[in-house]
Length: 176
Image (cartoon, rainbow, N blue to C red; front, side, top):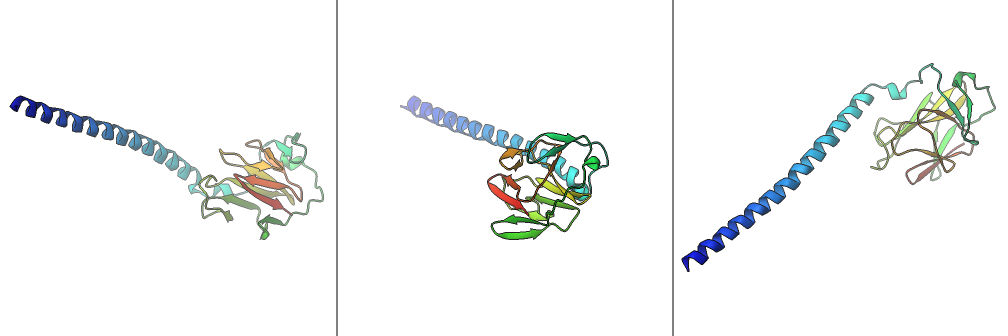
């Protein structure tokens, strides 16, 4: 009888030990995932601590893509001829935001010109850049930005035209 009681206590202790081991293993994995995410966030914070994402882009050769055709048109945005582009607003759900800055940023962070509190949108997702009175779309995200239903290439300035639709996650904006 005593032997059975000791055996039952032993199995109970073993079960609790396994339970704590299993919970601890999960906690350790969650902590590792959290540390990894925290490290990535720290790297992103370093990258955006300065206001570099709001400044005019570097004066170097950067490919320009025609938004309507999706093909590269020039190797340098400074060489794009002055067309009669007349874009002054970005419209979302019948609300107009004036494009009155050299660089207009869109993203989840509050320091953007258009901040969208949505976890599917990057903190600094994309920017609309005005160079020589012509607006370009520049994607800074990992999730992608779509122009007229086509994913924009990264690290390229996309020439915008009035009526173009910019889609970020499931949200669609129109430039006019």
